[in-house]
Length: 411
Image (cartoon, rainbow, N blue to C red; front, side):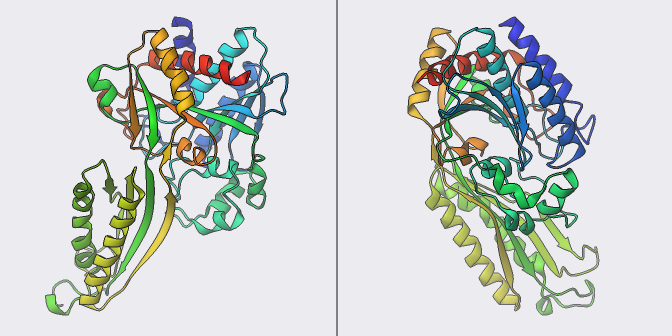
């Protein structure tokens, strides 16, 4: 276990350098120079491990440990290599390195397997740059095309389409990233928990039973720019006033569900943004997550209804742009059972639990049998520079993944 931990440590410590914000967390946005540097390093590691490596038209990177019957559906494992702004050094990328370590262990075992074992590093799971998410895993499933790439823009007005071209990819060929239906038999992902349960209770391994569904929307509330001192309160078309009356209710609507449903307004832009100008426009995001899709749809409807009422009162309008809708998913009970037996055999402490965060497994699990392993996040912190997980937990996850993969590879 110590040797495994050392390799994982070395790899993750090296990857820390590929950030746009050194000393202030990991900022590795899709189609950036930092992303390219990370992918190049992953490529070198995969080649060193004896894998056949390729990068696809969506910016995903794959390393294949060849089986004796490569036409059989493969076993795939990995996570994403992108990050949020000023995020942590383990979210996503540690799952890629754990999958790579699993491939090393499988190769070092000297065993021959029927199926290919595929390590993957997905591009743009977070959706931080373009407000979307699951770009790479969605492309692998055939859910992204050139029109999709033209639709979504970053804060500088650059589309996914343009960013891909600047990165050296051809967005007109993004559909070529699709894997043939049935070519992936199982998907396995290790990820930091990003919550406090495992760390608080001193539990080493989380076996994830299901992942929440989610909606992501951008709302634009229109008003009229006027002088802040000379425009009477009853004669204003104040976009901030209308928007915030609704925003203030969103968290309570989620709390009322009392079942783990969450709703977040994480972005707001007020225009023209002057201290002495009544706001002409407010743009804000809403991210709603739940294991019960009806809850998500209900909160979305309440937001729309409330915005309609507030804007009608001042004689203005609003718009909604839907960035992402994805259904909740239950993970593979078969693979959970195998992992549970392995966890017991190693005497690792464990707990079954759902995931409140979205992951590539959420997108993939809609179509392919999928399982996730969680490892503890210190104090439950994630999407922040203080994010931390002790490296030996990833080593334990790699061993569990190896034992699960060995069973699946010879089915």
